[in-house]
Length: 247
Image (cartoon, rainbow, N blue to C red; front, top):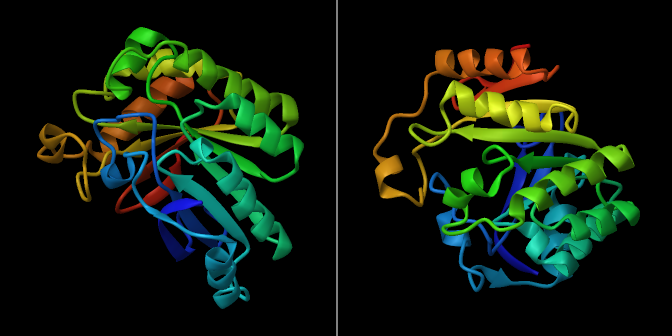
């Protein structure tokens, strides 16, 4: 597997769990607000074998109850994901997958193999090629349809699905856009999280790097929009307050 890094212990990536977070290198998206821009190139990161993760898991074995597979986009390395998930299963740990949803075939295979317990999917925009194009750095093609199919597979398989949208100034902070996203996904997810754009870290777009993150009040307003559009469980996530249920 080709990794960009590992966080040995996190309590914020999967709330209610103590997780080891594995960042897979390489991504097929170009999200302007990406904070892990160094992981976007497909040849980024370092190639490691299973022993690397096995040692990390062994070090914190008495504290961990899960691993979170993130990125980049981990679904671009299906065999690497399998390796990480099987190591987690060896240790009796749960697994959450963070994904952009562009590889429903891989998600279905992993679920069929019993390797994933929870999926967190980043919904960038309403599920149309026009709205998704800015997050691909070009034409979106069938990516929105693939995202929707990933959500449908999770629903069919009964796995908990958290949908997330990063609220970034001038890109994804308009009530009409959040309403459209909510209408597209309201029957496909268990909860919806509006997360605050953070200009810390290696932000891909220099213009966004210089902009102020949306306020908590703005996120609460948008959460109300999502709720009114039919989503039952709506949360916000901010840098200071963490995860909070709004509706």
